[in-house]
Length: 296
Image (tube, rainbow, N blue to C red; front, side, top):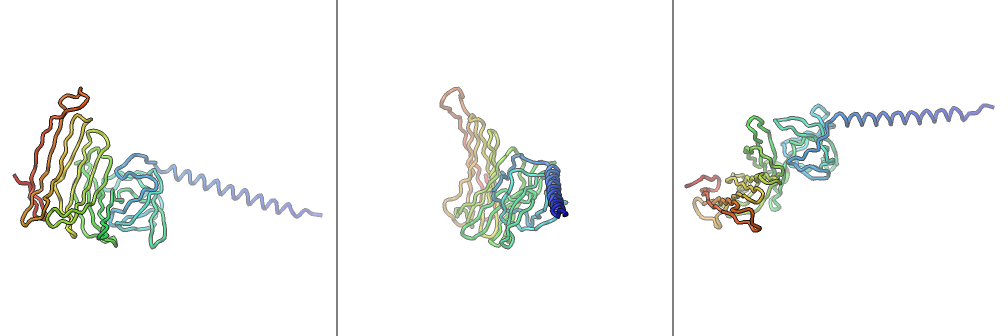
């Protein structure tokens, strides 16, 4: 009598071996794919890390299947779209518009459907703040970098609650050793025709690295530049600071913005309680509701 179970066993073994073989190929392919891209762990101005939320800065950002401009396009998502980083490390540093930045895997939503893919970091805003009253969002990012003259072209954008662009304004920020970037949005009606102040801040965590603040007066429709201010401290033996003082009341005609400058240097650093030689000065600017002009 023939044993009919032998073909069945052989078929079972064949399927098992086939499954293991396919699984091993997939693992090898995954390892080869991961090894094909440079892993970037460097700290950056975006302070990227897993689960951090961010906002799309580019007018339209392309999401790729893999971390490369040559990879298949998955989606196009507009400025103001909320995203979340899915990994700590970036991949495959790529130079676009003078910026040598990595790609990150992110999650996002389209029509309430959660999706994921890779985005080049230069398409992401450095920071975003929302006005709770109007629903407008104030964000900024790096549009391009001029490596020959060592500056980043920064753009501030205002978008409405439907992510439609209301206003944008650009300026050159000369590269320093700043490692942090953030912004502040505060209601402020001390300046003529101004509803709020939007401040763009670049800062560093080490001594001797200046903090630079670019301010805008927001009138509800347009952004208007304010005088730039900066501050720096060096190991507690020297400091320099600038601060803008706005008029307390709105009056007819031009107003005066005062930049208060203070510079301090330690007289004798051998003492337990440091004494500073302090020098104070002021710069005055005339404000007409849209522009400022330095006055004597």
